[in-house]
Image 1 (cartoon, rainbow, N blue to C red):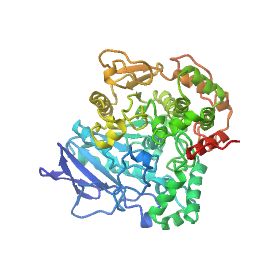
Image 2 (cartoon, rainbow, N blue to C red; image 1 turned 45 degrees about the vertical axis):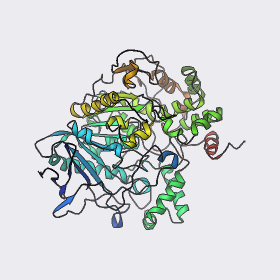
Image 3 (tube, rainbow, N blue to C red; image 1 turned 90 degrees about the vertical axis):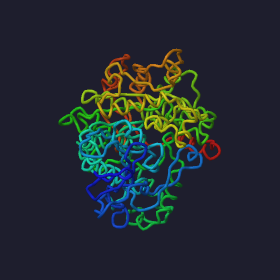
Length: 571
């Protein structure tokens, strides 16, 4: 590494790059880790970039992958910049000390956005605070939507995931020159980024590329291949082209993005519908990632053996999915129809819903739907992973429970990001959290992530049979108001709650409907008979057979979706 006061220069495997000194750290933006995925490389696995001569400027964010914009309702709270250009397989590095002698911990950020939106240029993901606190922070772009996750007869699957793997391989080769230790890499991501990390944890080809992993509001999962094919076929029908990679490669990028947005506009985590996702491909993803990570018969402890895990969610994930578009009120008005739709979405019997009503007697229909779907999509698989993984490496669980000051959002999906990155003062963070987010909470959460990357211990008890969950909530509320109980007066102390979701999980374990259903392709199918258990005992002493991520819609789901466009058709 060479540098003057304003322009640090670092050597990468493909050429030298010139960054900037900003606020006491060195920043390098838009470094290519793979060739532009267009022309002969479109719908093909990533290949190395062409080496360059001289010094390449790395002062500005590189191009972002093609993607449709958010709808107007979501664009008000989720900032998603677009940088034009073909060279979109790039990454950024923030480092306090470039040079091979530093050997600092490394954190690699994989952004969320339903595998269709987002980029490393989102201001919330600025890595300055991590570099300030002694971490080399890397954030990556990867192909999105149909370009990254379309399923075609004439192209490999999971191209976006293959991009992420290529970026991790670049980090392993190059990060020492930026001051990082390639043997102390933590990969972390939120939502679709966390789902991606779940797949990488289970991928034999990714073994050895990272030492620790953080999954924020996203479980290991595989999407049913037919669900992805439906998305591609519907796009092909709108474009009036065959559903092949060759035909899509000839289409205009903007037309592809517009068709994708139109086909996917009625799909959501709550309602389901066609969507892009990671699929079992027999290659990079040889089996369902959750199934692979839960298996207790894998050689050498499985692909994630020895990888420390930090797992968690927000207490009201569903509010981001429902509140901005006005669906919270519609769900409450629909009442029984919405609850029937949630049962169909979750493939659970009436006993589960009755149990949730008993546990949460004051909950509105929208709150019950949100709890059911969040547990089905996130908490159940993540807590199963925690139980299975604690014998293989240190495992920690958290919940983010501080409610946004934007009306209606509560402690919603993605709200924790400004606290993790300590970027709460940026307009992009304020649009989701509101004004005056607690500084102390950002300090607590950001410090925990830094500590986990550096030592493997975020600062609270590791997961065990008592199920300790670290609650991040309002520092001014003493023991915390959060979603789990009333506020208590007194000084703020880190709050640990043991088994806060044990009663809900017992309902899912005992559900005969889930235990008896046949699982679709790509879903988890462990054998066993579900049994209720007392709080504090192993959460999944037996493993019931059920489809965690089924897709078969019932009439209630269809009626629920139609309600978004002005009423429910009576049958």
